[in-house]
Image (cartoon, one colour):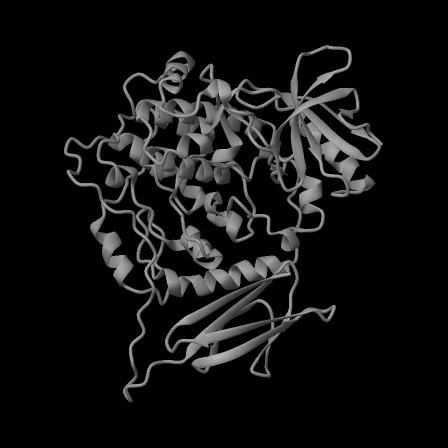
Length: 475
């Protein structure tokens, strides 16, 4: 077993971050070669020998992504069953830390950071690699003005081997997932473009696009909720830049840019002279934020990785739908009623049965247009709006009383994590989770959930007529 303060050929110097599956240390080799590194380790007991081998195989793929805008993997190894990954040491701030101030960021800075991030995604695309977990905490801006993309799924085996159904692969990043990711469909680089566009939208407006707290509502928002155009939220943002971001936020992947290069060109054309690394470094140094010199290396994240299918190999047949996939579909269906979204600003179809209030609000908001190809002049808007339009949020569907004056029944949605459970309500069996919008009688009731091992949870509920009660059971 590795000694305390030592792992493989490295001496552990100081903790830089901690996550659910491991830690990040500042470390250096015993022989002093190569300088200091950020050493990612996995928590003891989080994987077995087979998973260790898969992790190291995955590291070889990640190690092949050699690009200035991708955090370099220096070395991967194993010490008595404990995996470690030596990465280049970074000094600066994550995009999440940039957003922590809660204010919009200069369009020139957003374009400069976006173009660099897209260069990393284009390099990954040429290697048939899809990130699948882009979020602000996975993007880093160094003091030198260079964007670094990291967490290309080094711990994929440990995270995914037990299947995505048990751990909830969207934990912490569902708000930045593409619609096809939420639906459990195949993903490619265009899925990463959607996620990056959500981040660029947030950088420009200071507001997260999908910010619902309830998981079902969040799933529904990702799939159907109108997305306000950037220039409708912040009128000072150039219309071509707003349109470029909106282009990548098309819910149909076929309507998004074909490649990161295509989106990067649209971003460059949206501002006068795009910033380079020196301008971005000066901008970062002048921010009223914690000094980049004092900022620690980003906390550890272990994100799933998926290699895009090779074009010369026939794709594998679709896998049988998992319990988690069925749950997402069911929750999305339930969330549709809660969202009540009309026609999305980027052309998403109105789901059947959706309320008309949000649709009317969306109809009043300006709809972003798809940027023209790089060969043609970019669109412009000489008359920007004079007042910022509010970000559209899902609205609950209002229920009307029936002809007899009585309100409709109540509904109950129940989910259990990480395992399913059998549910009864006042002694009446409702079935096993996930249960979605089960009609129940209004009033006080006692819910009992029983797992296969016999463990139970009880909840006292007050079910309101015409409303849905949602229960999440954590074991």
